[in-house]
Length: 204
Image 1 (spheres, rainbow, N blue to C red):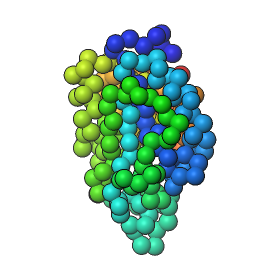
Image 2: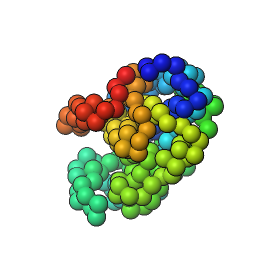
Image 3: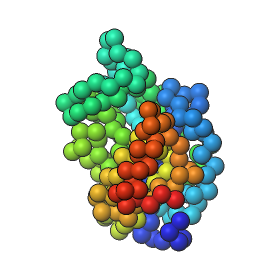
Image 4: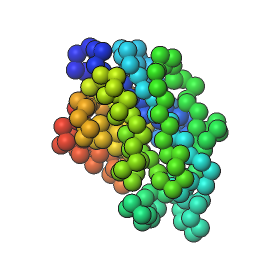
């Protein structure tokens, strides 16, 4: 790590939810096994934000919303390519809840994303149309937080997009790989790690 976290540091824990863990609707391999690492990491930070995928039923990113389409196919939407997913993290379902092994009681903000019916959302900072903000960047700036450390699920999607947006927004950015796991669709994990490294995101 970059020394002990200070009052300028924030930990962003990305989507530590049941549906992204084994047994869930969109399980990341070994997703549940990072919860102890997240808990240990979070205890080092005074400031923690948790993101929560929070889709309405029939969300446009669900393959079930597109007759004849299967999960993990790609379609073109108004803002570009969109991967279709199994129905997951539907609002007020057990799958959308945080994993029971997550123990971060001092988290000061939960950012819900993906709740716009017609826009998917990977990043903690903006929706997939790349222009609808979540408000997180403004919150962090107003709190005087300048260094963002990210972890969670999945390394090559929501963690990746969040890290790239944090870096672009001017935050000093790191990703803790021990406390993250990837889906790895057709080499997506290696591409995400290389892109983050090339952009100047620190991989810890």
